[in-house]
Length: 96
Image (tube, rainbow, N blue to C red; front, side, top):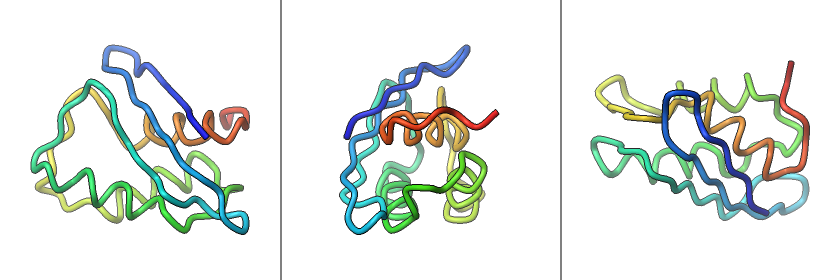
């Protein structure tokens, strides 16, 4: 599954993932944003893997906030933007 989101004032966020037994699997985040340190990308992918396909945007974003150390710098992307891209990949409407 594939989802994209252009964060207002930010960059393109792309998520590719599979579903296994109703859970996110093989999550791969990409886009034209920057993360410091680079290892934060692995942390994000791992934090999303295993979450329920029915997770709300708020739940997805909270999981990312919890997983990312405060020292991680995100340029042109946010946990909330990543959550929107995940929901789009799942073909579910964004939470209002």
